[in-house]
Image (cartoon, rainbow, N blue to C red; front, side):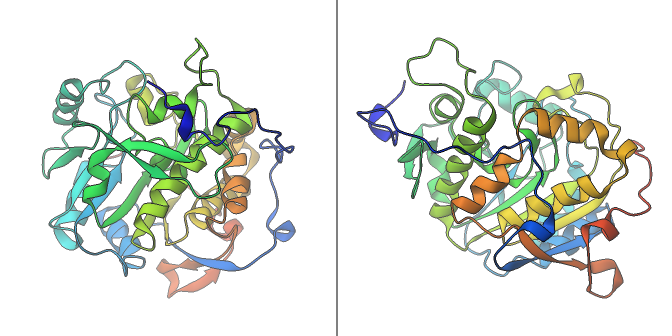
Length: 345
């Protein structure tokens, strides 16, 4: 079901200006604007996750939803359950994990299938709210090119704050999956919202949106959710077990060849996703070849430039090293001396 009145192009075709090429990386010294703060730790553990989150949780209050990709059954790369359990026990004891059903037919396509998958994957230590289980709601997209509003799981409206807890990795269609993908796809409901993002209205091909247009539609979905929460949202990206595949591919994900890095956090969604990308680009050619190939061939960098165009944050940042007394470092310094990936729990 599509509701054409909610599309920005309602009633007439739009004339689109040429979007920046999402396959071209913009070096830091070519960016303009203000700097946001991003925190960084190499401590890939429950303690590191807690430390990163506690730097950016000042506006998290009331009823809290933790937006997490809980993964397909037995997926090997998701954020470890014990880390999330420790974070919630210490800092968010009343929070729910929040999710939505998928647009593709798989282990999380229906609520019944989704609940079984949550059980298989061990997400049983706190309530998990499948936000579109009981229906949808539409929330406005301010300044959207493609949408005037986005369809989300209607339980999203029950929350006062959101923590985007993101496994940073590659993505088959988006190039990479950071906080923007976690929110933009992850909060859109499984039938209407995700359909709007992936499909041209009236097209028989439900996956016909690609490259720059897909990145822009996904980002506008994210902006709708951020507009709903205002300042009561924060972002934590875990750079670990980074396959070029999304966690939605489960056990079929491509092998991990990119080194583990650490955990980054910010109250600025663009800054935290940009910092992760900058660290990837700062790796050696051998370390980052597969990930960069995935990002650039899908034009995934358009996520970043469009977030900036949409006023969603800054692509310049101060990177604070939590392991060294809060010293300011560069992405190149964060990417030094990385250990080869070794699977761990």
